[in-house]
Length: 300
Image (cartoon, rainbow, N blue to C red; front, side, top):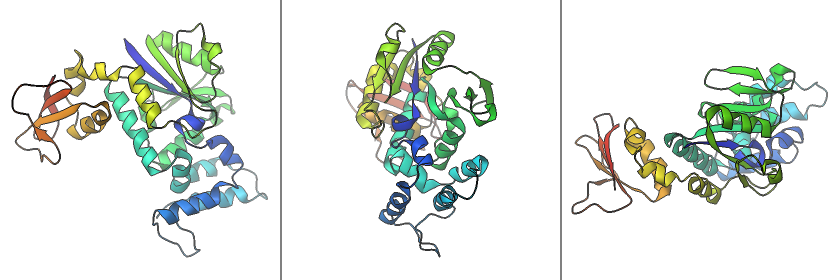
């Protein structure tokens, strides 16, 4: 069975409600400043704590200027480099790392990722870029699109293509389920489960406008999709071979699967060589070539 995961964005993939915050921005200016002070960032000539190239306070200044009409292109351009604002929206640096690790794990397991939002796709792409989350991990993103006069459409990141699709989330999810023949897990903080009662779609409902997915929710995703079985099943050679050993390490560390390496060239670090004696369960043994790419694997 092939699996697909559909994420909502606001208060699900993100930690803070991005759409509302961007349009009612007064609460976040001080929070961004405090975030930088706590993390030891530099102070510029105006007394703002910021990283080189960060445009969060330029964005705030633009949004605060009520004398000018809202310039969508300029806002999106600033969003792409508004790193303090981006980390605030996404719940901080550690949570962003957790999200990236989850994406790598799901993609390595062959899970297709989608996003369905009531917000603007253009803005979401920009804020993810600010925190270095690649949108190319998604097969498709459904939401409002400025190029379609703010109507709902589909953005396909891998081919950079936009197609009209003026329909709701339920229709979108059922469409990809049918077209791609996927077992779907839909994750949202604002979903009415009864709407999907007859659709054979698994729902993970998060607290309404809470702080988004946490580590417990991600573990529940892994459990629901039975990733442990995927990584230790018949297709494990197909999954591992060709994967860089660092990627494999990050993806498996939360699944309680030990990784052992046999290589003449790899710097072992905190890895262990093939263990002596009889193999035990929950152990993955891999051969690594001179480029640190897995070329053979055995799962016990």
